[in-house]
Length: 274
Image (cartoon, rainbow, N blue to C red; front, side, top):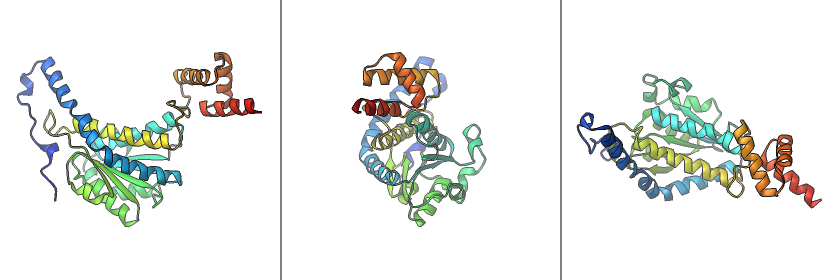
């Protein structure tokens, strides 16, 4: 049974409109400092889900995020950042928001209240029991997300969730639940604030840990990153110079030729061995 929704509880602050700018900023910062502590408490749960995702993705599976509003946007954001950061295909991690991509910029009326829509969206990607589905909802009560997890479980798809209330309906449906209890928001009910920050931190942990375990990082470097601008090319050249102890001109020539830091390193080292 769901506890009282802490995400909907009244703020610990009042008369916000009477505060000075510095008071507003300082009080928001005080609240924000509690977020990493809430995430820390959930690390054992995050650990379990990461290991399951890694196992599935090691065997050709994918990771899906579904959510509505802020939660949906955060899932889409995390998914969209993995290809350029780690050089993976854009169908490895897929973020879906209730109402479609137009909902990234403007709210789509009633989209989150449809319990059937998420599964229809997921079927467009031929989701299967090889994959993992994570539902993201600060309240843990969003029908779109709950309905998606319910349908997925019937197809033997492993499910997880990220929510900011304890014992929510969404957590009840998930195989692996991550509960980031950050307490009342500075502006009552505005879960884009602490709840959204906590969800973003958890998503950072999940995707980053999985990508590292899948070999997309070497040492502490993004050796598979897409070289999509001059800044990243320069960063790639520096990685090669540091790793191989060669001059910048040769490093840049090799990088342009092989199109990734990892491929460049592998090629050069294979030549040295020969």
